[in-house]
Length: 154
Image (cartoon, rainbow, N blue to C red):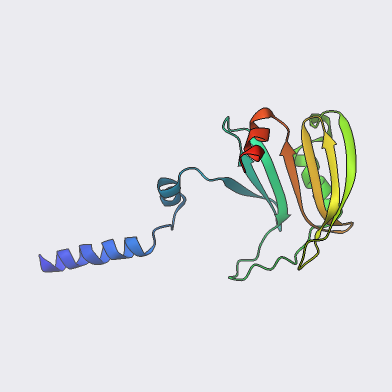
């Protein structure tokens, strides 16, 4: 009987030492995820954030981080590949009428990597961070009411 109790205690201890080892455990503890990430191409990840209705409000496209403890921010995405991913995720004909494009040249230390271009359509705003050939990431923001409320709450 003591052996069984000891085995039960060890199993209980092991379970407590890995409290966040499955998606189910994380959902039970913290609720639904704020972001979900998808491998859209080799080396490229798209992380989606949803509104209350379940529709996508934001997608961040970035290089896939290495599977090491230290996650360097130096990886970039080829501009042509990024354009292909953007077209796949939100095709031009689904963006609505093109409204305006702007250049963003903001100094933010220590990396000074806050430069890029922004395009605004009726339904989405797309920001591409980086320069031609070496882009750090891109964001797609949908301009639906529920998404605008999401940005106002932050």
